[in-house]
Image (cartoon, rainbow, N blue to C red):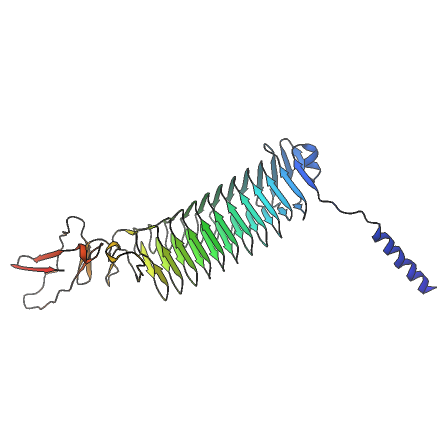
Length: 425
C-alpha cells in the first residue's frame, strides 16, 4: 500500500503541472491611475509613485511612460529592467538606481533625473550584460555621498547618447563618474558634462578593452585632488572626432591619460587646462599609441602643469597642431614624436631644461635657463655677474617653433663689456 500512495502523489503532481496556463508578455503604458496601479504604483496625478518596493520589468515585458507623466521612486527604490522601457515623460529617483540587465532595452526620450540625499553606492545607471541604453533626451545625475552619481556601462553592453548627460559629484570621494569597461561600447554624438568637486571625482574612464567613440562634446571638470580626468586604460580604444575639454583646478587634476596597451585616435579638438600643481597634463605611457590629426591645446598655470609626457615605449604619431599656452613653472618630461606625414618645420620643437622650464615657441636657453622670444625674435635677459678672474663657459641653445629653416639668425651681447657674440644657425 505504501508504494501505491507514492505513485498516486506523483501522478497528482504531474497532473497539476500539466494544467498551468501559458505565460504572456505584459505591455504597460503609464498614462493614468489604472495603468499606474496595474504595476503596483500609487497614483497622484500626474505621477505614478513607487515608495516601498522596486519596480521590475521582466524579460519580454514592455513599459512605456507617456509624455506628461512622471514615474517617481522614493528613497533607495530602484528601477530594474530585464525587458524593454521607453521613457517619453519624466523619471525621478532619489538615492536609487536604474539597472538595465541581461538583453534589456532602455530608451530615454524624455527626462531622467537622479537626486542624491545620503545614499551610498546610489544614483547610478548600470547598463550591463548585453543590454542596450539609448538616450536622446536628458539625463541628470547628482550625488551627495561616496560612490554615487555614476553611469557604468560594462560587459558587452552598448550605450548611445545623442542627447544631454550631466553627471555631478558632491563633496564625498569617488563621485561624478562615467565608467565604460570590459569590452563595452559607448558612442556619444551629444553633450556630456562631468563635474567632480571632491577627491577622485569627475572622471571619464574607458577601461579593460572597452570602446569609446565621441563625435559630440565632452566637458570634464575637476575641483578636487586627482579629479577631472579622462583615462583610456588597459587595452581600450578611444576615438575622438568631436570636442573634449578637460580642466583641473586642484593638484593632479585635469589630465588625459592614455596608458597600457590602449589606443587613442584624435581627429577633433582637445583642450587640457591645469591651474594647480601637476595639473593640466597629457600622458601617453607604457606601450600605448596616440594618433593625432586634430588639434590639441595644453595650458598650465601651476608648477609642473601644462605638461606633455610621452614615455616608456609609448608611441605618439603626428605632433602637428599641438599648442602650449605656457606660464612660469611648467615642465615637459619627454617629447618623443613620430611626425608621420607632416614635415618637421610645421611641428613645435620643445626645449627642456634641468630647471623644468620649457620653451615651446621661438626661444633661447642660456645654460639652464630659458626664455621664450615673443617679439621679433628678440628677448632681453640678465646674466649673473662673475668675478673678474673667473672662467665661465656659456652654453647657448636656440629653439624655433617652425624648425631651423625658419630661424635664420640669433645674436646676444654681454654688457658692460664690449663683447658681442653672433651665431647663425
